[in-house]
Every structure is written in structure tokens, then in C-alpha cells.
Length: 162
Ligand SMILES: CCCCC/C=C\C/C=C\C/C=C\C/C=C\CCCC(=O)SCCNC(=O)CCNC(=O)[C@H](O)C(C)(C)COP(=O)(O)OP(=O)(O)OC[C@H]1O[C@@H](n2cnc3c(N)ncnc32)[C@H](O)[C@@H]1OP(=O)(O)O
Image: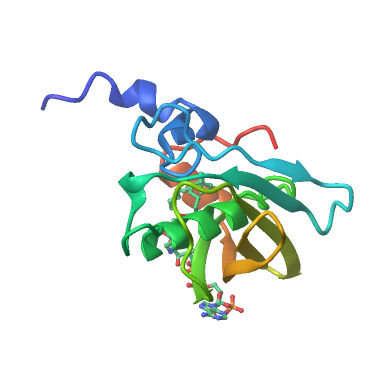
């Protein structure tokens, strides 16, 4: 049986190396959003993440506005960025979004997330897409579940340095 010669190499890459194609933040994904977050972990149990966003017609939904699915991606990505400062690996289990106002293309916007609380494996996060003046365009609430290390190993991922 033939095996893919790159498979073994892939399996031994760290999670960070394998995440370089993440659509939200991966530097290696040419079609990605290349979001760059600043993490504020001043309060280690209540980290916050912030990114500047300015999208173009590639991500258009209604004429002149960001596609709703992309807005969901932005909020999801912002919330997922809270997991590392909390020193866990977690995946989105449930997310709900309020689309309050259409989010414009070609304008600088702000993406802000914060951790609300933890219940066992369950992490509850919050995120907003805002105008620079703080008025809110979309709001998301997310439930992230901490991934068991054995599940991670089964997916061929090594534990990153967190
Ligand atoms: C296995 C592959 C691992 C590969 C990934 C490795 C690492 C991931 C970490 C970092 C990723 C790196 C880069 C970032 C990339 C993207 C960032 C954006 C984030 C995403 O894009 S990430 C993709 C989308 N994401 C998924 O692809 C998840 C698919 N999913 C699953 O893989 C399972 O679903 C899992 C493992 C998450 C949980 O599975 P599970 O079986 O362990 O847990 P279960 O489902 O039972 O839920 C646990 C508790 O949540 C309660 N619960 C459920 N729903 C609720 C609700 N609505 N309200 C209140 N509570 C609720 C239950 O009641 C229970 O509560 P209790 O424990 O108290 O009973």
C-alpha cells in the first residue's frame, strides 16, 4: 500500500505550524483574512483580544457590506483567540450572533472579544464587531469546549507550547 510521503512530516508538526493556513489568522493562507490580534491578559482569568479589520469586496454580502458568514467568522476567530491565554485548546461548540447593523466594507472596524466564565470544559466567550467609536455592529456569544489531549493526539497533533 502506498503512503503519502508528506503524511509523517505533517503528523509531527506542532499545532501552531499546522494552523498557519487558518482562514481567520493564518499567515500562509493567501485567501485568508490575516487577522492579527493583540491579547490583553492583564487579568489572566479574563483575557481580551482585539484586532483591526478592514475588508474589501472579496467578502461582500449585501452591496457595500460584509457577508454575514464572514461576520460570524470574525466573531468566532476573535473568541477562539481567548483560549491560548487561558492555556487551553478548545473548539467552538455553539455560537449565536446578533447582527445589529450592516457592517460596512472599506472602513476600519474593531473586533473585540472577552472571556466571560468557565464551567469545567465549557468556556463562555463574548465578541463584538464595532465602529472605532464603540458603536456595535454585531455581537456574538460562544461556547467553546476544551479538547481532550487524547483527541488531539488521535488527530495527529502535538501539544503546542502554551
Ligand atoms: C478532534 C480534532 C481536533 C483538531 C483541532 C485541534 C485543536 C483545536 C484548537 C485550536 C485550533 C487552532 C486554530 C484555530 C482555528 C480556528 C478558530 C476558530 C474556531 C473554530 O472554527 S473551531 C471549528 C468549528 N468547531 C468544530 O468543528 C467543533 C466540532 N465539534 C466537536 O468536535 C465536538 O462537539 C467537541 C469536541 C467540541 C465537543 O464534543 P464532546 O462530545 O466532547 O462534548 P459535548 O458535545 O458533549 O459538549 C460538551 C458540553 O457542552 C454542552 N453543550 C453543548 N451544546 C451546548 C449549548 N448549546 N449550550 C450549552 N451547553 C451546551 C454539553 O451539554 C456538554 O456539557 P456537559 O459536559 O456538562 O454534559
